[in-house]
Image (cartoon, rainbow, N blue to C red; front, side, top):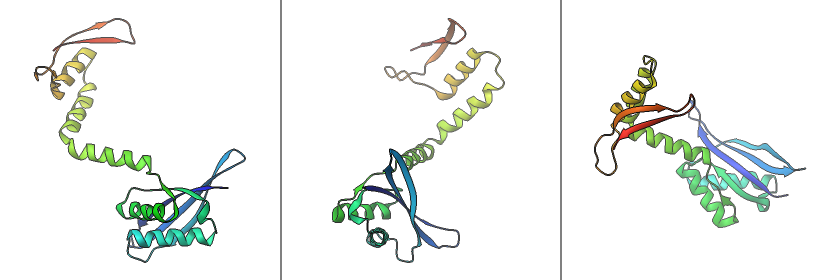
Length: 173
């Protein structure tokens, strides 16, 4: 058997740090995931200390040489630990996709408050509108969508209702 692990380091409300690890493997064509460690982490959160603690847990189970990959959160300290493990033991570091999406989303929200406020206004306005055309016109005005060629705001003309499930929005470019 070969294994993959996930790891997370966090500090609780009482300022106590923990390292949690889960092992993942295939058994009879089924993915099995089970915790293998949840330990207090008293050391400084350096990459070296985290890598050392991960290795201690793996060595306890005598599986160090059977670990193929590690997926942690994307904290700088545990990312550094993964680099150490990759270099010293060939354990491949796989970034957690969910954490990457979370980081991107937070960055977008932090840097686009004006856009988010406009979308909220559009959502609030949508409850007061009886015609779809009114909502589209309001949204275009709020978002100030620009023509990429002229940098002028797009203007709403009309909607052609081809059937109940699709509508074509005509804009002046």
